[in-house]
Structures are given as structure tokens and as C-alpha cells.
Image 1 (cartoon, one colour):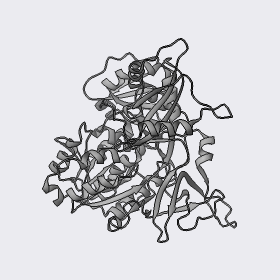
Image 2 (cartoon, one colour):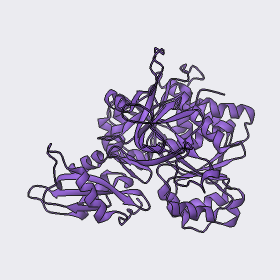
Image 3 (cartoon, one colour):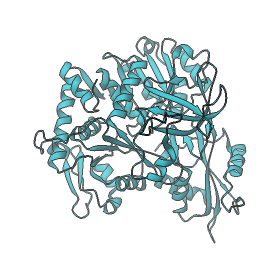
Image 4 (cartoon, helix red, strand yellow):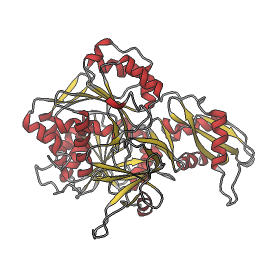
Amino acid sequence: MTTLLHVLPALRAAIEPEARALTLRSAHLSYGELATAIRAFADALIGAGLDVHERVGIFLPKTFETVIAMFGAAHAGCVFVPINPLLKPPQVEHILNDCSVRVLVTSADRMAAVQAILPHCPQLRLVVLIGTEPGDAELPGTLRRVQWQEFLASGPAGGHHRVIDTDVVAILYTSGSTGKPNGVVLSHRNMVTGAHSVAEYLENTPQDRLLAVLPFSFDYGFSQLSTAFHVGASVVLMDHLFARDVVSAVARERITGLAAVPPLWLQLADLAWPQSVGEHLRYFTNSGGAMPRATLDKLRAALPKTRPFLMYGLTEAFRSTYLPPVEVDRRPDSMGKAIPNAEILVVRPDGTPCDADEPGELVHRGSLVALGYWNDPVKTAERFKPAPDQDPALVLTEMAVWSGDTVRRDAEGFLYFVGRRDEMIKTSGYRVSPTEVEEAIYATGLVGDVVAVGVPHPALGQAIVIVASPAAQGTVDSARLLEECKRQLPTFMVPHAIEWRDSLPRNPNGKFDRPTLANEMKALHGSTATAPSPP
């Protein structure tokens, strides 16, 4: 088995170059064509002077170029940074600067959208534009632009930087407990081990056809590529507007595996599925939050031959647990057990193991544990800590991910989610930092104080509700505040409701009393908030 991410499609190309790797609408890319393009992109990065481990940002929807750029950066010995295409300029600026992106792969329209932030990204040297439009955005300083095809033809063959399996290959940004998103640093070993592990329990084969509907900036979304390439399966790329488009694509493309998050499954469960889908859709998977029982029941009734895999994962450790389909009837609320090549511990605050059914913190150890957070030793030390109960004779300390999630393990070893220790909001499959939402709202100048909390929502897991006081000499203007939020924040971070107060309660330490506000908002808005309109 290979230990380098970019070798996965190359090995498959050597075995069966004509096999289909990617489909995008009516276009197809074989494994041989994909491997050739990956090498060309890697050559071009070397020709552009990128050093080992320098970062390549990809700010695109799902296209062939998106996949080529990610795996091509890995092949060159560089680090790819997929940027969620839903993000707005302030979030893109943070990512570009936080990890010093040198090359940005994007499109003319997206570059125009982020033009205003480019002067504030001094480490950026080159923009590679896909498509035929040259783009007319004015570029600051020495920042150059080049068209995709010209770039692919520009590099000398070979000469890539040497890397090994423990080298960093990707940085995926995920919201932290406070402030801006954190860059989770992943190695080749992390990603290849994850692909092998998931392909093992999903029993993937070269005959599988996977529908990629989740963003590649999300580890669960990216794993549709790595898992497929590991076995030589085919991936259909899709950015959907409506849930019914997903159902149509599953039927049209004869999809065998479908991965989604609870908000999308809720919509899909209410649609009519063609009977023919059950003849080819082998399995569906859920992660990014618990799937409601009613949703699971609807899906199983509509797709009785399709096996459900309920999973739990962390960007910091990729995937942690899965519930085998044969256990779904007996324990549909369970997270299951550890995936292959991982150990999941349930421990007390002192690191000692919990008894059966005693709640404790989920700790993940093994080769899926990431390399920490990019350039943030404080947050890394909070989440990445020594694994419990290590043999004192071992000189080197093994690090594990301490998830912050409270779970319990029953007498048979099956795990159940209890709750989160921190204040993160889990909405639409994303972890959202309340601080990041609050900072964007403060920046509008329309509030004096503000607190963001999550309330239960049947479709989203949690909906974001803000409690705010008016700015000094200001007036209450919910419509204007929401409009500013939509301009500055991606859709999944836009508040679903606003509650105005003359002042916000504080605890004895002078901090906002978040627990009290959260309980009040749950009583007012829990399960009643409505999702925002799509962008």
C-alpha cells in the first residue's frame, strides 16, 4: 500500500489508465488523463519556484482543475489548502494570510469577488485562473496571473521535492472554539490511512461510483476522492442547488455510494426516490452530526436495499467511529465503534478510563491523528495531548486528539454521543465559532454588545441565534444587520434570528452569561428557526 497521497491515482493509472476517474456533467477524465495532468501541475509549481511544503490555495467549486491542483500540489511536495467556495472575502483573506499561501488557483469571477483583499495578502505571488476568461481584476504589486493551460505547459518535467509519509500535505480550515478558523495540518499518512480504513469498512471496489456533493475543504468531502482513488473507483463531481438534483444525479449516474450531512439527508428523505436507485446504491453514509431517527427511518423505507453507515469524525483525526449497518436496528442512536486502525478511548478528566455507561471525553489515538493546528501552539496544546495510560518505559510521547466531546460506552463497547464541552455551534454539518460570528457583527457598527448561541433545529442540528444590544445612539435595525451578515459571512454562518436587549447579562467575572442566554434562546427559538435562503 502506498503511503503518499498523490500516488493513489498514479498507481491506478498504471493498472488501468482508461478507467474513468472523474465525471463532471457530461465530461469525463480517465485515471491516465488525471495522472498526466497531476504531473503537469506539479511540474509547473516547481517551475514557478515553489519550495517544499509551500502552500497552494484552491478557491473553486468542484471541477477537474480542483482535483488536479490538490493532488498536483501534493505530487510537487507542496501543501494544498482547499478553501470552501461558500466563504466570503474576509474568511478567504484570513486563510491566505494565516498559512502564507503562495499560489492561488481560482476562476476569474471568484478573483474579482476577492479583489479587494488581495493587497492585504503580501505572501501571495501567483494566481492561476481556470477557464478561458483572462479576468480583469487589477492585481497589486508583483502579484502575477496566468491561465490554467499556459501554467500546465510552463514547468520542466520532474525534479519534485522529496517527501515522506509523515510530511504535511494539506491544511484544512475548521472553526475553533474562539476566533478565526484553525488550520488543521494533515500528513500524507493521515490521509492515506484514512482512505484505506474507510474503503475497508465500506467495502469499496473499482466498480463503485461515488457522488461528491460535500465541499473538498471538509475532510468528509475530500475523503470521497481519496477513498475512491485508493481502490480505483469513479467520482462524480457535483455542486447542487436543490436536493432533488442530488436524487436525479444518483439515478442518472448509477451512483453506488452517497455521503451527506444531516441537513441534506433531511431534505433527501422527504423526496421520492426512483425505485431503480435501490438496484445500484449500495450504501449511504452520514457524518457531521447525528442523523435524526425519523430521517433515518424515511431513508431506509425509501431505500430498503441500501446499507446505512452512521459515522462520527473530527477534522483533527479524520474519522473516528462507524456503526455497522447490521447494528442500526438495535442501536440507531449509537456512533458505533472505532474504525480500522484507530483506537477510541472514553476517559475522565484525569485520563483514567470510564466505566461502562459513565460519560467521559472521547480521545482518538492512532495514525489518523493530525499534526496539530497551523502556527498555533496554544490551541494545539489544548486539543493535542499525550495519549492516556502510556507505558512509562516509552521515551517518546504519543500524542492523541482530545475531542472535547462527551460520550459514553455501553457494556458491549458501542459509543453514544452526549454533548460538547465547548461553546461551538454545529450547524449544517459545520462547526461554527460563536466568536467569529460575533466579530463580524461587531464590525457592522450596528450593535453595542452581541452573543451568538446555537439552538436546536430539526434540519440543521443547531441554528444560530444572536442576542444584541443597540449601538450607542443607534436604532434597532434587524433587516440591515442581517443584510450585512449575508454580505460578510457564508450562508451557514448567517444568524437565523436576532433578539434585541437593552443590555446583556454578565456573570460575576464580568463576562457575558452565555449559559443563561443559551437557555433563554433555546426556549424562544429551539426547533422553530428557519433556514436562510440559498445564496
